[in-house]
Image (cartoon, rainbow over all chains, first blue to last red; front, side, top):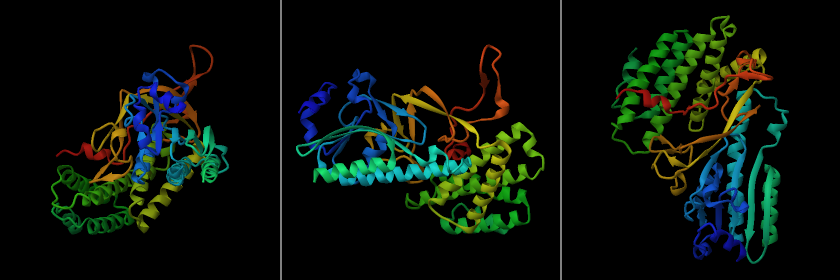
Length: 166
Length: 244
C-alpha cells in the first residue's frame, strides 16, 4: 500500500504492520520530516496504552522502532498525534477510549477553571479542543482528516466514519 | 493526646481506621481553633507513617500501600489547610504581595492534593474544607481578578515512566494511576522549552502573572514581568523530603 511505503521511508518494517489494528504515530509524520525530527504528541502515549488495555492490537512509535521525541504542551487541550486505523473493527473501541480521555481532560479543565474562578461563559471553556490527524486505511473506506476542533464534533466524526465503514 | 499516640503506632495497618481517627482528632482541634495541635497531629503522622511508607516496613499487600499513600496525601492537604487558616486569619494578609503569592501557591497545592484524595474517598470534613477553599478563591477573584498565566510547551528526547523507569511508550503504566503506593508520572529527558503561551486557563494555575510583577520595560517598548513558567508540584512530592 502507498501509505505503508511512506512509513517504510522512516525505517519501519512494513511487513509487521498487518499485525496491528491501530497505529499511534508521531503528530508530524505526514509532513515527512527527517526521522530525527519526528515528535510524538503527549496524549498519544496514553491513548496507545489505553487502546492496548482494551485488547486492541495497537503500536506506537516505540513499538515500530521510531526514535521520536515527545512534546508536552502543558495546556488543557488533547493532542492525539496521528492515528492510523488499519482495521475498521477497532473504531468502536477507539471512540470509547477517546471519549474517556476527553472526559478526563474536560474534568481537569473544569477543575482548573473553577480553581481560578474563570467565567463559565468564557469561550475557552465551552470549546475544549482536540488536535489529531486521523487516517483510516482499509479496503472499505479511505479517510484522511487533520482535525483541530471541539470535542463533540470529533466524536461525531469518528462515529460517522464507523457508520460508513460498517 | 491519646489518639495521636495511637495513630503513631506505625505497626498499625488498618489504614481506613487510621484515617477516620486522624480526621476526627484533627476536626476537633480545628473546631477549637487549636491550630498548633492540629498541625502537630499532621506533621507527626507524616513523619512517622511517611518514613514507614518510604521504607515499606508494613507487611501488607502492595495494593495496601495505595491506601496509605492516599491517606498521607490527605494529611498533607489537611496540614496545608491549617497553614492557610493561620495565614489568612490576619485581616490584612492580602495587602502584602509576597503573602498573597504564598497563599495562592498553598491554595493550589492544598486543593490539588484534596482533589486527588477525593478520587478515592470522600467525607463531610473534606467537603467542608473544599467549600472553604472555594471561598478563598472567591476572595482572590474579587481582590485580584481571574488572572493571566504562563503555559509552556516542551519537547523532550523521551519520557521515562516513574514506575518502571523505561521509556513511557514501552510500558503499560498509565500516568496518574497508582501502582503499589506510587503515582505514575513521566519524567522528561533533556526537556527543551519551545514556546511559552499567555493563557487564561492554564494547566498549572501556580504560573500566574501578578500585576505587581509587571513593570515597564526600561530597555524599549512593552512591559517585562516575572512569573513561574513551570512548577515541580506532585501530590506526593513531600514524601521525598522525609528523613528515613
